[in-house]
Length: 165
Image 1 (tube, helix red, strand yellow):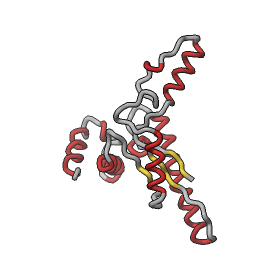
Image 2 (cartoon, one colour):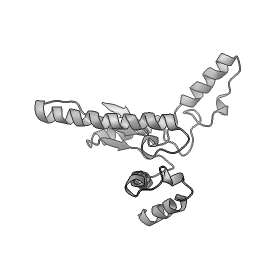
Image 3 (cartoon, rainbow, N blue to C red):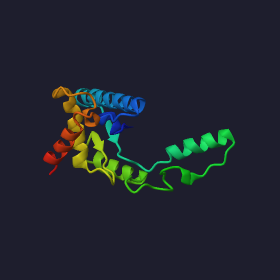
């Protein structure tokens, strides 16, 4: 069982609260599901496993389809080039869906639960540091979403510089 989460469900950037909440809930659900499946595997010869696929930036056509549907409903013509990016007009920083699938299969073959996909803009090391900083908002008693808080933005930048190998 592979559920598709999002880095936004882990690092919670401001501006898309509902999406962040849904992906955070899916992360919690998938973690709990895997724990239950692990118990079944160890206690009663269960066979199922769960994994959390966490893509980075992906060239999907989701926005393209939404905007096309809006234009059609309004009786307007639609220009696909008006959409920032999609599979037919890929953004340089984003991965193509096939790259996500290939990476997922590679990681599943390694028995990974958390499948954190990089993209062409953010490397794995930076992703890990962003996630660590986010969790440390709690353990360090910082303001929530401190990465974007004026009192902590510079400290976050310093944290990245000091911890990047």
